[in-house]
Image 1 (spheres, rainbow, N blue to C red):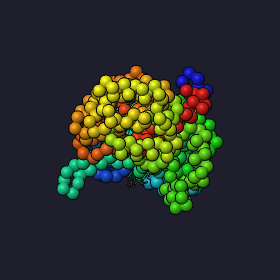
Image 2 (image 1 turned 60 degrees about the vertical axis):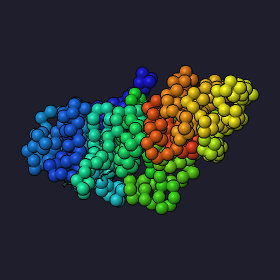
Image 3 (image 1 turned 30 degrees about the horizontal axis):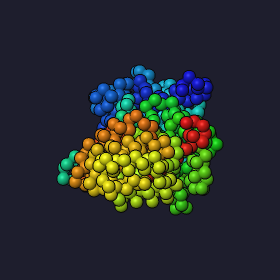
Image 4 (image 1 turned 180 degrees about the vertical axis):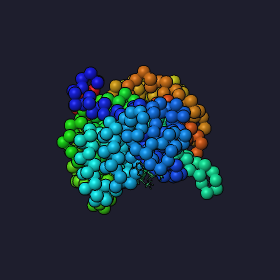
Length: 492
Ligand code: ACO
């Protein structure tokens, strides 16, 4: 993909890449005081360097210290002996212009301004002053008022959110986990939501490629990051949380290019007047008409998540499964009620749960005759293998569905509570599905050990699993919507 790039795009990618792949980082405002933003960021990076995950140089900048965590500290950037490519700024807003002037003289290429107190609180003059300096200096900036980035592969961790916290009873617990390396990127206007998002991804055993928090987007905005991620080999799915887009035309142009190759799932906040007011004071964003955003997302192939849970459900589905080439969905279950729930939700979401072809029905009737599935099984869609289900019944039935060319996606509701169903039905289905391009999503209902095991096993095997039939149907609708978009545009 990189071969086809024009000069401008290539240069943008190189500039943004400094935030994730760099030889040298300075933390301006690094501190020894436990809990300060500059202390946490510097410590995260020092820890990752010690573990060998971050391999570049690391410099603390602090006018009052000689050394921090064993690193020689410098009073200003200019005093650093080596080159500095990337800086992380964690000093109060009024000092930010002078830090950037200094960075200019030092030849710094990129800066993440974590500091708040700019346009989001009406301090537009200060933001303009900083803009002026960075445009003269050619420094690319993330923020201000952001979390910066977290790269699960290169160990660049700017999050001032401690990984663990000590409870009042002295127990140490994970507070902001760093997810394992994976293929989902999170791009977020809200830093706090970014932190929550990686907590969710880690808790749901989903891997992360990069987190990028862009805050007030004084310089680098969502479309620049999307373009960068289009060419990032580690990223397969992009999750985008936004409050408002400034340059709609540019955004649409870039988003179209990205969604041709990678799914983008958006969570757009600020739908109501109250939400829009909150967005204005949060990141200085103008939320705009929600209907317009709906239209824009549809036009450019971005999937708009219905809510926060849906955001992660769609991510899981698109990260693990191929897209659907039509909207005819088969449902297979051992639990009649959940089968009905899934059917209802599919139809509500615009999916077809139509009766199977004569040929497929004939194959199920043959299974009944052969005694492989019970005579009282339903087989018109949904397939209900009932409470006497076994792993083999699931496997034989799935084989029929996977071989039906009219079926574009399969929802497997494998409720584990039945007496004869052994947990290997997950592996059997996953193995069988390898030879097919039909997307599959699964569901097991329950909040205790076995349900967690089944869902986790499915996920590990590459079949996204959910805890309700509705969520499974919703995830399938994402695979259908994106697949249909690609087909309509002739990309599939
Ligand atoms: N160069 C180097 N170091 C400096 C400079 C300078 N020019 N000026 C001050 N420092 C040092 C200070 O001496 C201090 O070090 P010390 O602890 O050794 O004394 C350190 O830098 C930090 O300065 P403080 O004045 O102590 O500032 P503090 O850490 O309290 O606050 C901060 C700075 C965190 C940047 C604050 O101004 C801020 O903006 N906080 C909000 C951050 C935030 O929430 N960002 C957005 C999150 S994402 C979102 O939700 C949109």
